[in-house]
Length: 98
Image (cartoon, rainbow, N blue to C red; front, side):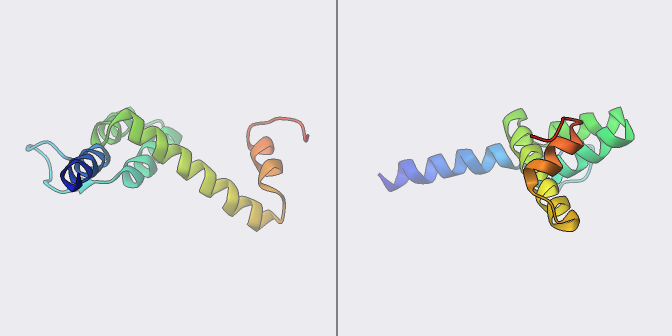
C-alpha cells in the first residue's frame, strides 16, 4: 500500500517540477515560479518568455499556479485598499459592483 502512495506522490511531484532542457540551465522550476514568470511575461507581451515558462511545468500545473497567483494578488490588493476581495476582483475585471 505504501508503495502505491509513494508512486502517486512521485507522479504529483514530477507533474509540478520539470527539468529545463539540456541546452539551458539544469535547475528545476516549480509551478509557482513558472506562474510568476508566465504572468509577468504576459504583462510585458514577451512571447518567448511566455513559451519558456509554459514549458517548465504541465499545463494543468501552470493553470493552478496562475490561479493561485491571482488569488494572492486579489487578497493583497484588497488588504491594501481596505476593500473586500470580491470588490477588488470585480474592479480589476471592469465589472460593476455587485
